[in-house]
Image (cartoon, rainbow, N blue to C red):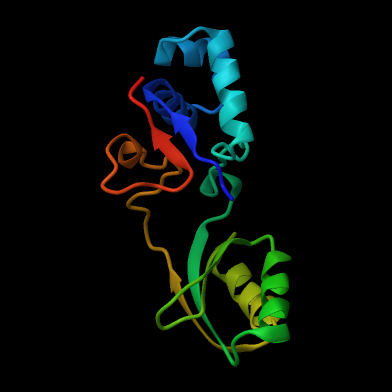
Length: 174
């Protein structure tokens, strides 16, 4: 059974500030959210232990690193469930060019976000590695022409103003 974590406006402000500037020191975060560095440290530890903060990472620019092609592949499997599905998922997990893989409803079974240096490298990846994954019946790909919006910042307003009770997190106005 999951316990409910009570968070307040300081926790929300801290989570928001941390999403926007993950390299900020506790002192800098404290200035932003109006808490001392030691209070920030205690709150961050509590939020990490509760699983709200799952890790820290540097966000790299794919284009600056020569990864100029971004594509979305919509994968349909021959059969659902069982060994074939597991083998496909394990195969996808082993491909570093696949940044994300989502099991979805709709016309496809999975959607993959893939990066490659250029179209030739993307084509080789698809033909020699992705299409050879077990259980694939069909793949349709969309090549990204331009980025309109991309963010890693999650919206948090729903926590302070819930339309219905949430599992795991409860807001206290304290």
